Image (cartoon, rainbow, N blue to C red; front, side, top):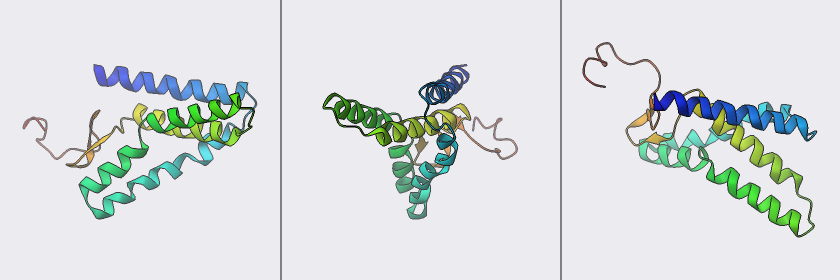
Length: 132
């Protein structure tokens, strides 16, 4: 039940970001164009599960977009225009939200399919019987 709620919440965040982009006259298509860029963080899996989980999790959380948004707002208060920072934060948060809405959560060291939202992908036959 908690996983379904988290997935719904993240879907709502993704929709809100899309609506904000449209409302503020920003290029909404940028959300789609930049979507896969954040998945480059999975390249850490070439070094192993631990490095992969660390690099993936460093990008696939809301801290980065929040810090980027705060930096944008601080610059705006100081009368410096840096709209690209707000667009980066929106694309980043949109990516995280869509990933989590689809069930791709933060990774554990046990491999790419073991996430804080549960396992992703097909499970071996009988896995449900063994308690996964």
